[in-house]
Structure formats: C-alpha cells, structure tokens
Amino acid sequence: AQRVTQPEKLLSVFKGAPVELKCNYSYSGSPELFWYVQYSRQRLQLLLRHISRESIKGFTADLNKGETSFHLKKPFAQEEDSAMYYCALAAGNQFYFGTGTSLTVIP
Amino acid sequence: DAGVIQSPRHEVTEMGQEVTLRCKPISGHDYLFWYRQTMMRGLELLIYFNNNVPIDDSGMPEDRFSAKMPNASFSTLKIQPSEPRDSAVYFCASSLRGRPLHFGNGTRLTVT
Image (cartoon, rainbow over all chains, first blue to last red):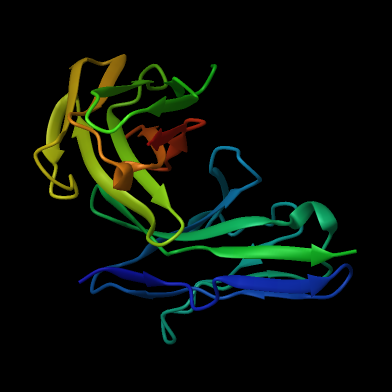
C-alpha cells in the first residue's frame, strides 16, 4: 500500500542553521514525489517536485530509491521558512500526503 | 488565472445544521479533489472527480457527507447534519491530468 511518513511533527532550528525535513515513502511502482508548503493560514503551495530537480527558495530534495526517501534540505534556514511542510506521493491519479512537519526558524 | 476559489472562507454553524462548501477549480483542469485537514490526522482525501465524474469517494467519512460536480467549473461538498467532529479546514484542489495539485485557500468549518 502507498504510504508517506514524515517522522517529525515539529522541528525547530536557528536562523542560519541547516535544516532537513524527513520524508519516507512506500510504493511498489515508480514514485513521483512532491513537497508542498503551507504558510500560516494560507493554501498549500507546491514547493518542489522530484522530476524537476530544481531548487526553490534555497530548498532541494533528492529522491533516494534505495532508502525510499525524499528529504527536503536547506543549508541556511531563514525566518520566512517557518511553515508547515507536507511530503506527497503521486500514485495513479491520487496524491498521498504525509502528516506534515511544522518548521519553526528561531531568530 | 485566479487559482482555485473556495467559499466561504469561514463557516460557523450549529450541530445538526446543513453545511455546503463550494469550489471553483482552475479553468481547464480535469481533476478535482476534496481534502480535510485536522491537527490530528493531517490531510485526508475525501473524494476526487475526473471530468466531473466521482472516481473515488472511499475517504468520505460517512453518509452525512456528499459531494457533487455538476459541471467542470463548480463542485460542492455538503455535510448534513453537521457534527462538532466535522470541524476542520476543507481544501479543494484541482489539477490537469492528475498533477501537480493546485489548492484553494480552504474553508475553515467550526461546528458548535
């Protein structure tokens, strides 16, 4: 069965410190993975998709099929990065979301 | 494009009342999804449509919930009767050929 796991519900880092938000998935097919971000009381916005292999707002994520992971990383956290982050797996026509990680960047 | 438009933004109602949430997807998108977001369970898929046809409603909690998509530019999610445990943020999302998802601003529902 398809499953997305984000082990950390809450994550706090200091401004300027590196940040890594973990995401592991379970899927028997070829995975297509995404990161969505939700700033306070706003809509979820697409941050990254693995097939694009791009860096958005300094964030990157690499798909590791061996470890079935798609961790989100940023070398230097900024206060404006404080938000809720969701990892999502697209399987067929459905999206499966993790439970989210709330990131707080401490000034 | 204005994006996915949901209304109302906030809804406060009393237990037992009927609640109707509305969604206008992005023009041209052929998929529409309804999600519920709570602190405890995160984002849960309730139902999704393809070309206005419901494809999977297995996430709808119970018969009190129903969803329709009468045309390509409009969908509703109805709860009748509403209960306090239905309090959550309800998101509508649309996509072209399944991905990526574009979300609306959500409707924050409070049932007292």
